[in-house]
Image (cartoon, rainbow, N blue to C red; front, side, top):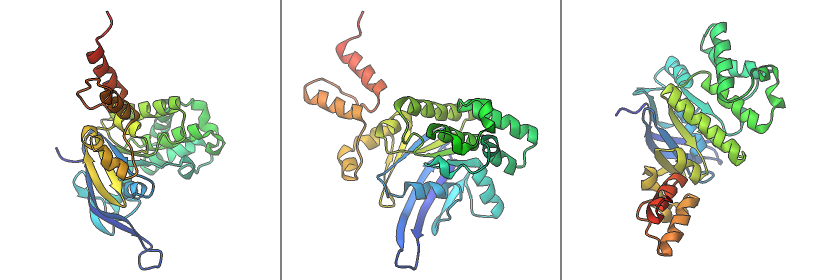
Length: 286
């Protein structure tokens, strides 16, 4: 299968040639395939946010390439501009992404820059608001008068209104309560299904990544040190702990139950897996 988005040997350095020079990414390569969810994990300072800013042309690699549909996004100004519409990025802090006087204008900014008609722009804004479960009336409100959770939803709406083929989100559930996290993740997966899109989620939550990702990329000190399915990655618990990360809570619980003699013979990384395996071991009630 051909990747929809691909990083090839990305290297990037902050403040090159100065006393503050710092290598942020070192020969990072990974691919995103059609209709898949990729989890990008790593402790603070590992290079996650720097990497995703390369994926839609906000940063240009010192060496290496970013390919969208097999073409270098930096081959021309037109290609870079097109990539920014097709690869949508939602930042971790929504207040950094919101800047217009009203919510409507903020969500409309991307579609308007795509050259769409006013009728199409209005339709996309209304659809995006409904998608993130915000009332149409909120369109007249200043985005800076919203709660943190509402700002997060408006930031997501502003990106999905462009209907990108790849949706990238940096810590989309940070600071939200469990119900808010579940709603946001549900919206993201619904977008993936509705638009046949690919999704990249940056997260510090191993439980969150285990729940939604088909593949995981682990960054450490600017390098992609592990890549694979959740089974592949979370099976290397000692390595993850050594990198300052962890495994899902339910995985720890399963390990504890195994140590007490319960015959759990398959990997467990999500609550759904744990439930199914426990019913097999204990027997379902009549």
